[in-house]
Image 1 (cartoon, rainbow, N blue to C red):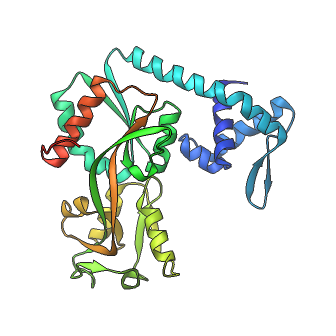
Image 2: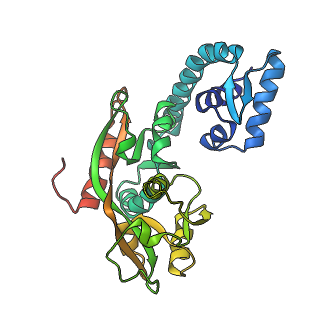
Amino acid sequence: MEYLQMNYFCEVYRLKSISKAARQLHITQPTMSSAILNLEQQLGYPLFVRLHQQLYPTVWGTLLYEEASPFVQSMGRLEYEMRHIGSGQQQIILAKNIQSSALLLESITRFRILHPEIRIETIKSSSSQNGELLRRHKADLAFGNLEHLKPKEEEGRLFLEEETQYCTNENSPLAGYKKVTIPDIAGRPLAVMRHGFDQYSLILKSFQRYRMKPNIILYAEELHSLIELAKKGIADSFLFSRIIKHNPPLHGASLTPVRHMHLGFWWRKDHKLTDTERCLMDFIYDDINGGTDKP
């Protein structure tokens, strides 16, 4: 048994899904399935059973997880520490979701110009996955929707409150609307991100309240694709108001009721912030908020 096998196994056990674990670890589903099968063959007993499309651990799987989980977490911490030491440079590993990447892009670029001695490595994730990256010591800081912060395990700092708006083309029949309701947009073609898109759950919940289903015609890989689809009038979407304003001829309309997302940085409680990390957060806060006083 190898560390990589144990890491794959623990992720499948935790998520109860091979496909979700593969996405979380940025590998293909066949690779994950093959790793679990090889581990079962080495051990000589099944680790999971599938019932009604759901994956459940066996008794042997649970016993293995109880022994392997502390080992995987320890190796994760060691890998994290060695990566920092071995870089020979001040380094920050930042996990952030798709739309947050767009909001932070200019600020991080300016920070890099002012502080070339600090290396910033970014990981594309979703706000719901950020905590796992922190827990597994794959990231120092996370930026995204603070609703996903776990107060018992993590600490955070609010940076801004951003409105999620319905985004459409300037020639759309809804382009003149300042506010829209779900019935207003029912049947309109929509595009969303395939991964790392916090607005996806918002869309589903909003439509479910009206017992409707969103007309999602496309799952995009990049935020740029959503913006281009909306500009060309092919599919509408839900984007942060700041992103819409910076991309004419897009038109944004507030949802009724208005949907706001509290965005900020967070980190593990057992992680002592470095001067480098504080420097980055202070710079981005001032850059985004125009130099206003910090909270």
